[in-house]
Length: 487
Ligand code: GLU
Image 1: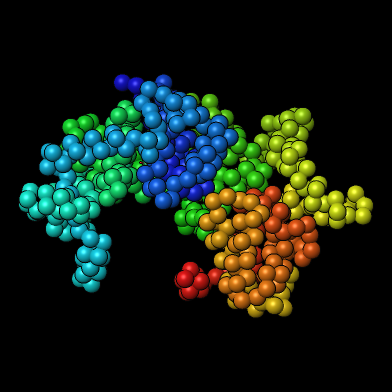
Image 2: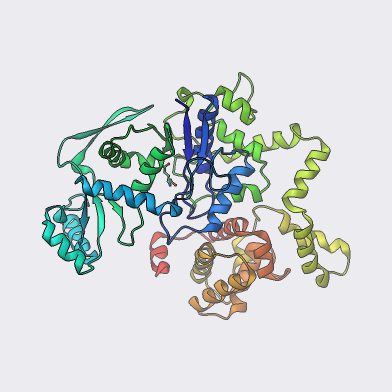
């Protein structure tokens, strides 16, 4: 048997450091065992998946040196490797399940499902499909179909008993079938859900081992049931703990930067970031902490993957990154990295064009442009405050802009300006009054080069972090404010 592992990201946002962590484990295990590492894009959620996100995930993993043997860009014998291009395969498999009576068509309207859930909530029952459509007669189904009533296909789940999930590290985990939902496998538009596509693809792509985040453990019974219905051997499963902050809270985009792009923008070196993630799952040689990918692969064993939440300790990352800068680069190598990070000719030209009309001496460049070459800025609440906005409105403006920027599909000045115009309208001041604190938050000064260009050049990740910092120094946002503003 050839060991085959995969990373299966959903391209619905920024490339997450947790994805790199899971990819590293899958990579090391495959390579250590002379196997193959596959990259599959799980873009069944058409509303949230974007090609930009997919490209950013591929670029980031590639930047970190985690290369895949098969994937949407490099192809391979089991393609296509993008789920949106595999609809026909899923349809055939759904048909098999329906024909064998292992799945059923559900014609329940969203309204009925909502009422059912409300009733379950009221009686403190877990939210679960109540099985109404399992008892539809063949005539009723035919009639609904003839009338074009939309339907989803759901998984039939045993009414009682337990499912035993064998996890490579956790051992046998028993989950009551009564707690497992009759999962939607195919949506009314004919698109599969994650669960169906994931199982079908892992089987057809001959995946032997699945190392994935522990948030999928509760889905394992549905997956194992699908393997059984199809008559397939399931892969071995290992559910990995999520990365945590030093205080053990979950690493989450709202609280800390989680995007690989942020760490890249801040000037972390890919080898250092990879090594840092490797220290969370590979035992380094005695007295040494620096490991390249080859050494990590060589030393990788499942035994060292801990089930306690691995801590994403930025102080440690800083220390390791400093060592890579000093110890793994001669001066020319270092210079090349600095140039690639922030001094590439295209970026410099754009920055120069902004500076030229605004300086009297070339030596004005330093203070004017330092913010382009910095990470976080130490701005204070005093500097951020403005006479036109009270603190609550100011925090609201910063929060709305954060959301607005996160939602932008393209990062360019026109769209950035539109977000800030929307923010100004929402807090009921003129655009110019709202831009002042943004100048301070983002450039560190109330007067600088044009704001929208600065935002575009700095990039989403640094900007998000500077807005987060500004919000923090202004006292943060309460959850009731978040709810209120979300409207
Ligand atoms: N698309 C899923 C995710 O992004 C993959 C989960 C799995 O590995 O099965 O988390």
